[in-house]
Every structure is written in C-alpha cells, then in structure tokens.
Image (tube, rainbow, N blue to C red; front, side, top):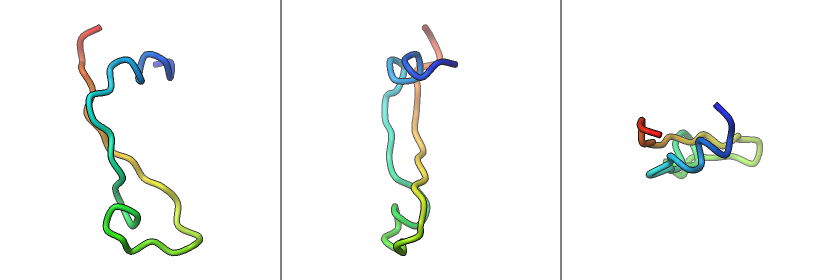
Amino acid sequence: MKRIEVEKRTILIGLAGSHGYGLNRPESDYDYQGLKNPFP
C-alpha cells in the first residue's frame, strides 16, 4: 500500500515501545502503532 493511502485511512497513530513507555535511550528507535479504516 502506498504511503498516501495509509495516511488517508489513518484514524489514530501513537508511539509504542521504549519511547511510548518513557524508557528510551539515545540509541532507541521509534515504534508506532495505529488504527486505520479498512474501507477505501
């Protein structure tokens, strides 16, 4: 799926993993979780 399609269908997106829990370190990456509308 193309990025523009994902952005149009996104309902909610948030940080997960170490950044979401406030346990990140300088070398930590970013993890995201979200909800999308399954209908075009």
